[in-house]
Length: 119
Image (tube, rainbow, N blue to C red; front, side, top):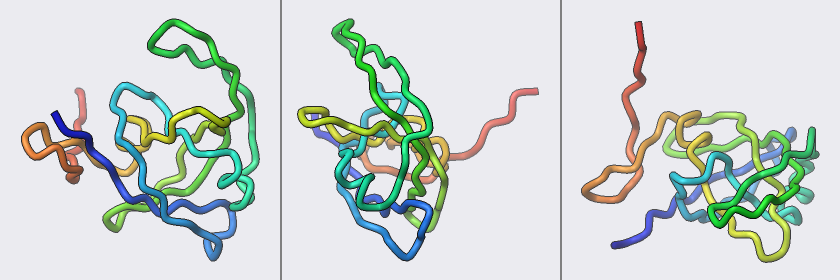
């Protein structure tokens, strides 16, 4: 089974300062994890700290803040985790939903998703 990656344009409050990053798409991760050093470069500041439970049951304390993400003509401000050294950088499901994307189960590529309304 293959992995899905996405090349995301990432910005902080100043949209003129941006970087493209290739991230592993992780539909098991709520949030997107980005290296603290890159978020610092883009002037993304932590707004709070959260306790995040890992798949193996550990609890990690990490800063989170808001970054602007762009992919396939879509732009969204999403919460990002300030990844420490050794943490994986991943694109989480919150960003996928915010950008209106989903993983195609056959091709394993990102595609635009239809929005759902529950009445």
